[in-house]
Image (cartoon, rainbow, N blue to C red):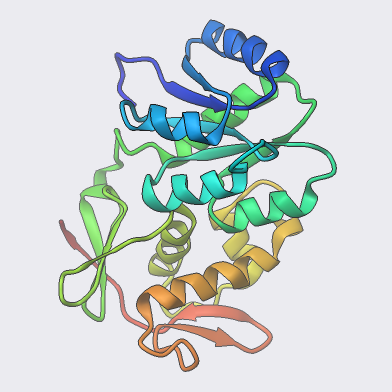
Length: 241
């Protein structure tokens, strides 16, 4: 995002009667909106332009929204808000586990969606970093760059990391050697209605361990504290990027 260009959204929904009026409403709110009726069309559009945020329906013919969501957060590092039906509770949980930033349940009030879009953009905006954001975290040779959202191992190799994994690791880096319970981690990583998705913490921890631990069965860094939660068992320093 920039101060001069409008925030760009990609709206992916196969239901034309919802997609087109919603795109018109969002355009009226100052967003630049591109539409896609399928995951395949969304992937094609992403080859030519990267939006600031993706609004993504879960239930679509062909490739479903969850599959596309995984691609968006792991390969593109794009913020995603899921558009879900009332009966898709498990899909919402899976979506949050793989890194979606938020969800709204159909039918929804467009003004609420706009508020959630702006909230997610505030959390994920990388165009205006805080004064200390030009510093990176370092622990045991690993480097986490908050501005670029990049993780590198002790050999300097870039390790792919999803948005949710980045937030989880940053939460630990902000509180090194401190025990964080699931509620605290959910509040830091997911925020809204996090108490409904405590299972997501364990799944994200497992994924993160696969990225940074030599032996996930005997983790050196992200340790489980029985009855308490998890902690990063390493000293963390902030140094210039």
